[in-house]
Amino acid sequence: MAHLSASVYTSHVPAIGAALDLGKSAEPYWQPLFKGYEYSKQWMKDNTPDVVFLVYNDHATAFSLDIIPTFAIGCAAEFQPADEGWGPRPVPKVIGHPELASHIAHSVIQQDFDLTIVNKMDVDHGLTVPLSLMCGQPTAWPCTVIPFAVNVVQYPVPSGKRCFQLGQAIGRAIESFDQPLNVQIWGTGGMSHQLQGPRAGLINKEFDARFMDLLIKDPEAAAAIPHIDYVRDAGSEGIELVMWLIARGAMADVNGGAKAELMHRFYHVPASNTAVGHAILKNG
Ligand code: DHB
Ligand code: FE
Image (cartoon, rainbow, N blue to C red):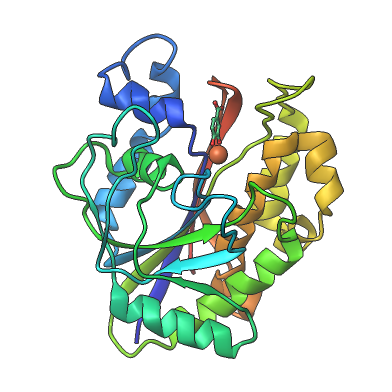
């Protein structure tokens, strides 16, 4: 059977991708940030999975106001890096896992979560920046990836509680796939930030630290944070953090299994308009 071995949490700030692509990662502004991912890149090399189930949000790139899926699973054989206005990032194309994606779609829909099936889509910085942070700059990504897009851009957005419960269903779906695959789940986006309006530039270190503490030690409490608290305390884009709760909900410890082990935790301000948060949890 497939096994969910670990979960990874990370911000996806687009300027991080640009810094890497333009060879600026050693510059004083960026160096401390990339240092925080040195452990993670080595851990990823030592623990390369067969598949990453990558929870991210599309930023009006593949989707527009024409169609707004709340939860969309990428079932295609491959996904091209999107052109977000400056040409596609010079990163490898993403190879999917249609068989596992179809199984997860079937299982999760039968567990009462309605997903949108996506058979063709380009992937934006929400997905490619986490891959770059965890894998560096290889000529091909080291594993297949199932993109899972969550609408946190256009209201109404899903609650943290719903995301956590969806993660639990995804965990059960992965563990019921009858091939011996090593699977990781990644929750991306965050942390506190606001890109528009009078509060543009908002960063709330206290909120970020409390969210990470709860996510690791008391995920049910993190999942109970109401939508209004994200907007008030973490800014309009802080709502991206609900995607971390999908990854956390899939872990064994919240589904009657062994305690999760914290492998790495990192936080750094600033990166563009936000703070960068990152953690790795291993299933016990
Ligand atoms: C920034 C952060 C994001 O999550 C994003 O999608 C776009 C921009 C930023 O901090 O600049
Ligand atoms: Fe974003």
